[in-house]
Image (cartoon, rainbow, N blue to C red):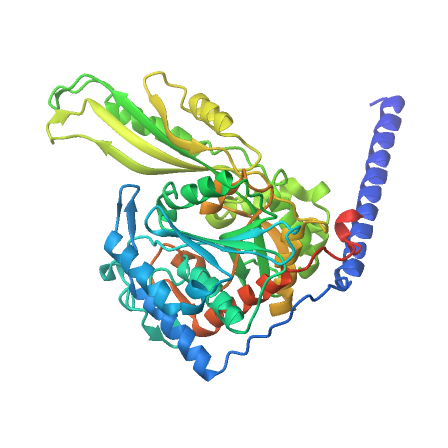
Length: 517
């Protein structure tokens, strides 16, 4: 190697060390700045009203009794065309009996929507304040005791301080918590400054095309604009995020899109004793295998999931604190780590799940048709059309017919900065209730009724203060769905405080934030 080449390599290596030193210095400064700003106190908030709910023994037993009764009514949605209408009618009667003040107050306007859903309007005294909407849903997914429940799924049986039953998480805890909070506030003479709506859909579990969509139509007819919408979605995670010091409340600022895709292969039928070289099953199986072997691109850093970790970085120890406070440098590394597990992989890409495979009619007959259904949850950085194009490219076989059965793009990302009214009100309420909990924006991997309201507001949030320990997320639509007595009481208090916090006319001046550095 000649002398010129050696000098050139020394320059390159030296430059590399300089660049590396500069990057490490910048990253260290950002990490230190994060520690300084993480301890800053929130600005002073105005307090227009302060009705403090005291849950004494009598009230506690009363609200728990009503909650259990709600769980025992099997308001199951089986499909878009089949639901337990008898139970829905029963639930309607139950609500009127459980919350007499809410249904008889001259302050509250109520109407039944699409026979089983409910819309409440509570006007505010200050008409220039834009109203907001709290959403919840009445229906639940099916459940049977034979699935392995420790208690019958519609028994609301209490075991070791937990109430078991379908709907305890999704979503009768929020529904009953909201109504119970408003009932207590009305009894104490509360009248809001800022008006608000309550929407209770009856078919959320089958896409909300009757309940939520008809509520939206009514509000559109009345030219209603909303400051924000709050629905179910994310929760308080305690011990769920590895390495995080303490619990974190994640407020969903968007939700993933959806695609249901049908793959099919048609061939000539024949006798199994004289099979062709390729069967419809084999061709389709190969296509499915290509989809599974070639997942959608990893997109960490291009959606709200990046902000989640930026907001939580100060709650991690080193070296994770250093890495997460410098995602401008380490995003690819963090993304590769997150994609290793199914639950975190869902946050960094469009997921692909083959859920149904149909083929064959007889043991000795070559099937003429094979079909598979694929469920995709679309990352916020992709569109439905992009996902369909990638499926076509990945399968790469003209013999496989690809049909979109149902689909929609990811929801717009709602604001979460210091000037975001809805986000900051929810955050303040969380911190009022749980001062040591870290709060961060997040992405909801499932879909909610709130997506139907995107034309009425630019800010939709998905959160309820359900307290999830490791393994609890599997109870969602799974077996042994449950909530603790204490957690349900917290929900009632949370919504009571939230409603009052929304009476604030404007947010305080923003405080310095690490995200401005």
